[in-house]
Length: 274
Image 1: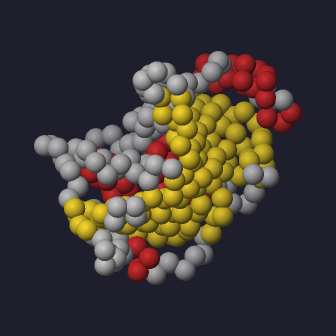
Image 2: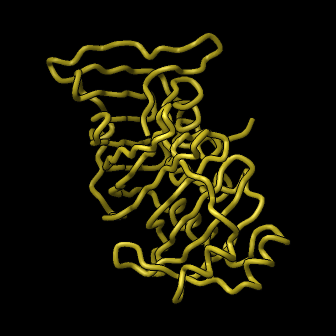
């Protein structure tokens, strides 16, 4: 069974505009990729430098036993008229391997908290004070898969939370290019671009001693209007104080428990969280 869940299924993306070489020509400065490298990448698949940088980020993130990070995201939605509108949100993500994960999201469409404590999932809506709980697998990788397959809980940036992000990110990739360096929130980053059968995506990786992702953009080629999902990462902390109580949901006195709505066959229909 394919384990990559989010890059090929998210609907928050835009179409890749033009070839890698054309994009690089307009980038200017250090962000410009050499034409011969772009041409080589198209012919040979993934350029060695793009592969190496992604592996470096993956090894670093997967090797962290715990961390917290701020995620500022935007989700494009294409209306029936063809007009695109954008909804912004911010999330605080806390992870403790092998079996703890929490995400607190604030945004225009919803204010939600997601808890995974190694035994169960809980999704809590702060606006309506409803929460739902379901049994969960015993590690983060399987939990991310199960949350989508069973409960319909989507999270495009969750690909970066797996123990081996490289394997998940690369499953649908047919080509990849190193575009050079660029600045994201004042940090010098390596800019990589990848093309897949279902999605195209870009990632900016910090050039410092900690090769963390600084920005992540996913573009869907299977959705009309090709909307885009964007996430920027900041305030990385690799030694946070994360007791088990952080990942355990204790319902407020005014909270009401409801069930996840699940279709026959186990596919979730409600509880979407990005």
